[in-house]
Length: 66
Length: 66
DNA sequence: AGTGCTATCCTTAGGAG
DNA sequence: GCTCCTAAGGATAGCAC
Image 1 (cartoon, rainbow over the protein chains, first blue to last red):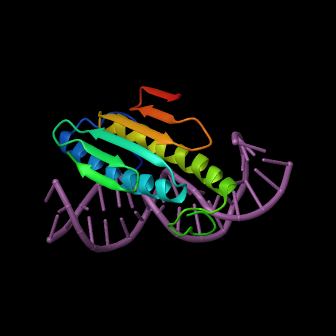
Image 2 (cartoon, chains in turn green, orange, red, blue):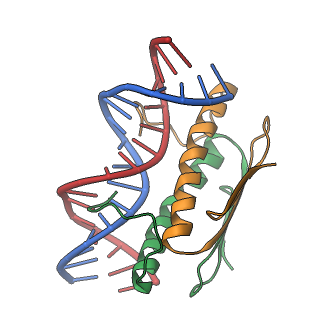
């Protein structure tokens, strides 16, 4: 999506990975929250980015950077 | 998205929740897998749907219904 | 690191089989 | 409960701040 379609492989540039991580993480967390609300379910979502803090998402109730 | 925009609240109809869960789960799992590949990160994703088996996703490596 | 823009690609609600 | 279709709304790559 976006202006150009990315190939499904590791982005070689670190800053590119960071930007993509930041943008896509936001999108996925939004969808995760919507799913938990719409379907009334429990979700646990945990991401580890090497240079940053892990992101934990528990359903629509709680969201935290540890 | 789709033909009609859903209100962000619990879907009252069980079959509707099941259909939405099935469709959106697939979308989120796809995005999760893409993020783990593009950014080369570890992800843990766990969903509990009351009438079905929990879905576990560990990065792009493994996907399982328990 | 974050926000805003927007062309472009992606996801999905509803319906049919 | 699945898969395929498709209109329509959503997410995002690249760029500028």
